[in-house]
Length: 282
Image (tube, rainbow, N blue to C red):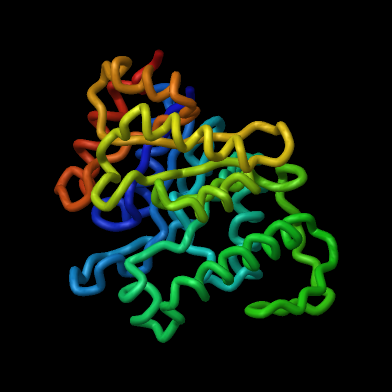
């Protein structure tokens, strides 16, 4: 089991210097990763300040040498694959190969897609997600890419430098369980980041739900490479009774998350207090 800290890219964490401080504290306290959200407005009526997640993670990379870094999660359908590939590769090289790339549709769709004139049909967004992921993998290789797809095109372009990790950074896929399609998508990549219903972000899942998901992914998995199942919630410092059964059920990462909509989710002090207590080691 590995352990990560999860923070939004708004509130106190819109400032890269604050995120660097969080990353440094997490590494010092023995955590294994830091993941930030990838939103542009989240709920647009809230009028909050946001930091670009890749800039925030750059600050985190410069402040650390060991922990893994990434987003949970990047909505690939609302980004240009060539720009996203460049951002991820740059961070991977800078950090010495510490990036984990987590992807999904993202949301809220009306605010983060529709407010900018982007498509909001989830079937179209799913098509763009799958096509974009395939294109990202090819761009990260550093080899010339020609692609004539339904949503994206590339004409004999090579994006250099390639990622430090070869053949590419690990790719995790997010989605709501028990929806099957996102987890079938995850089974084609390197990890699954499931949520277990609306409002579940800060709450640990039931071990039986994790066990069912793990069994489903195994049935659809091709190959025998490593595969991560990432679950999380808000935990006390000694959460072995929470994390242990989840590990037994198949989870491989515990992602420490605050409950959405609370002050603690957006403020540095409570997050730092939890970081300094250390991960809930088994």
